[in-house]
Image 1 (cartoon, rainbow, N blue to C red):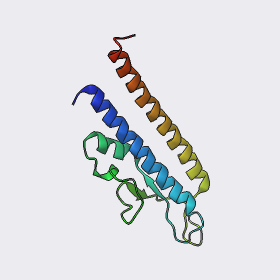
Image 2 (image 1 turned 90 degrees about the vertical axis):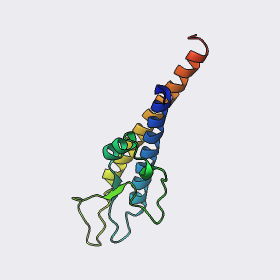
Image 3 (image 1 turned 135 degrees about the horizontal axis):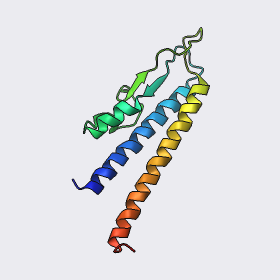
Image 4 (image 1 turned 60 degrees about the vertical axis):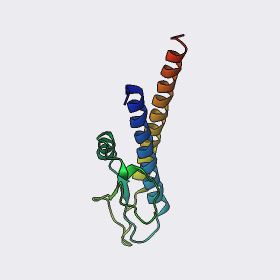
Length: 125
């Protein structure tokens, strides 16, 4: 695989992973009032390393259907309310902002890759 394809493939996995994390955070926020709901998250560093090592199955589908465990884990150590729910909207809002910035960075890097390719195609002009 040439370096450009490898870079774009890595960036694709990066964007898929940030999307999966955003879905997990959105699900947490949507379930803030659901009794017994446990906060879920994606371990971004572990999953990105897994993707870079070529272990992609966990990122192929970013749906939160019957099998939610593909890239998420339950977050421990959060304060639990009497109804068993441990979602903290302040935490989720901060993580959502961080994840959106990561996604924007990924998009900018993809744009840069394509601009570099276009420059090469046009002879460097």
